[in-house]
Image (cartoon, rainbow, N blue to C red; front, side, top):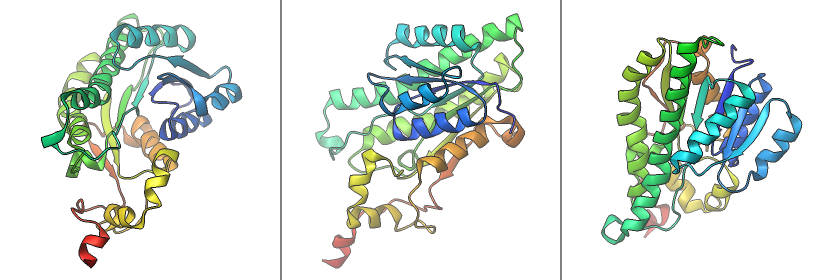
Length: 271
């Protein structure tokens, strides 16, 4: 794979998926900048293991100045950013219908998941334009990979805020940007990898509920919950021009063949 030496910025790099993605890029010889919100946590061992290739930087994803500052610091350390992976996001755990949802919850989910994506993508494009104009060093095939969700494709009752934020990323944003990004660099691409449930520490407790697991996998032929490694490998594929150089504007499903979202749980059918 042709990723060795590339500079990759990964948002949400202290989460289960972010750490797996960062590790995968580092193992392929990339320089990786990991964004974290307040605590680098699980990403710290990677920085210790790859001291010359891995940098941890704090930034609030909704703060324009902090996002711009992160790119400035990252570029000073590793040079222009060639790959951006947006893997941060929040999923409010409480089930709340639109009828009862507060405006504060709606705005916060949209701000973190969508505004935060916009700010990182915008800053990536700005620094890419600067690098292209200076041509030092030359950037051959830049790429953006966003992490979407089955919620963005099928919806998710009681979590319309999360679903709306992912749908906007997976379709409206990348469908528009695929036509804009080539104006900055003729070989630049943007895609989304869209998993269903991912077996992370945050989700593990929920996945112990047989009823919820049935609901999640009932329309999934492979009956498989994605592992962080699965997501990382799909992102590597989409980031590397050698494997996906003619793929752009695509939302790649990573959900075991899921055909739709169950509206009921197992006990609803048993009663």
